[in-house]
Length: 322
Ligand code: ASP
Image (cartoon, rainbow, N blue to C red; front, side, top):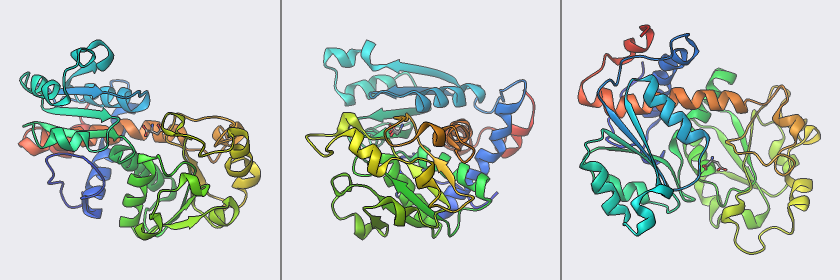
């Protein structure tokens, strides 16, 4: 086990060190096996309460936080915003103070506004995990991506990673780039100029506007979803045109290293940013990412709700059948 994890919240990759990341990934390795057992449960967070508070749509993230909490024996409550007082005009602050009065240990929050989890973290006594805030960060996605890359490649250091697609609207791209740079990876981003944020060059990533040079020699090809819900106006001539110039098919994938892996955070727009034969092909680790998500979120919940309060039996607990 490397280093420690001394944060009250998990709000972003920004602010984490390489040691923090390794500690989280090593803890996730210990929990990974739990989900493959016949009995997928350990008592680590018995008596703890996790509230999932999702203001934006989610399949993978919400489900895997719920499973992660349940596999650690925590009580997990999913608050559906559509059926809550938020619909009656309650402010974010009042909703969170109300939830806090019920004594949760962790609030997992997804929100369309960048900074919303930071806002509540500074006002609540419990731990807060950012499950995606607007176009800002999605730290557990970056951690599960790192976990998947490390398993597939045997290391994180010094890899060449090409992040392809709607970088401008992607909290995943931002968190991934921050994390991979901690390990000395070469991070390339490739997209039409309209889908690249201003000033991206200054963040230390290499910027491309054509797929071929961006994929040349890449160890990892990370494809991003076109975020139709965040596209304002005519940033793209058409999805068909985008698929033709930036879609990842077998011909394009051949530009990367022969042993390159293909990642996508989901949900995929098949036939737009990724071809079905690639999405389901032998180089795709998309479902490994999903499986890693449960282990990484178990680690995050454990480090914030269990270990931090001096309870639970550390990394030995995952090994015990329960
Ligand atoms: N599921 C990821 C997120 O919530 C990626 C995406 O939606 O494109 O950011």
